[in-house]
Image (cartoon, rainbow, N blue to C red):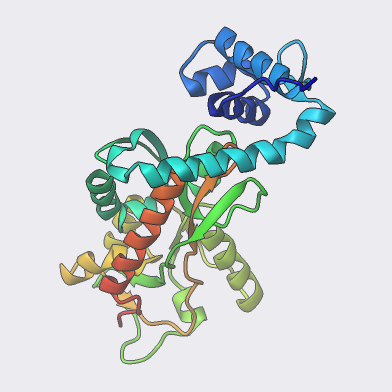
Length: 311
């Protein structure tokens, strides 16, 4: 006698992966915009079809059984194949949904408007819900599945996070035009450090690099003013408070307007390295497409900007 296989569907597999990722039927239901009983029914149907118990139910959470853990990679592979098939048959113009996007402030001042225009043109049925915050916060939000895609200083070194490299941002020194500095030559680091230094916030890589450099190479530590926003750093620099380390693209319009001048120094902080990062578990085709679109937009912006320091 031939056994009759009980069929299962892609929706059940998607639900299985979401429950495994969140450790919660309730959170999976919220993500799927359905009810917790509906999620339980899908998992029960999948368990019956596979002849395997997938989860151990606990008081407030669930965890994968040994069989569930063993079947997880296969379920991920099947779902990715199904998603690619859907994407082949369905154009970007028909993709609908909400993209929860986290953005570092540097990107906001650069190519984010271009990206949003491209997203609207390519995915007219997609709405972007945007959070602007520090890279540290965006990393936490991404890991907690509260945002789908982040443009942040990366990469995010987690096995479930995919990172697409974006063009870097060169940092330059800038100050108010009337700040009294030696003219006609590059400044030595100790000459720069005679003035207060305006930097990114304490929790950032640029601040850590500045602090290490000054601590190692100078006898006396300069005053460092960490700014929690680029807008605040620009205001401080234009007010003559000190010399700021900021992305070249951000300061050029103020330089052209005569509100800032670029200071040539023997040492510059490292370029800011950004990634478009998104979670691959559970799979999110919209976030993956948007990340690739962001990479194209950012590279086009970099070409237009020239990506060379302006003296």
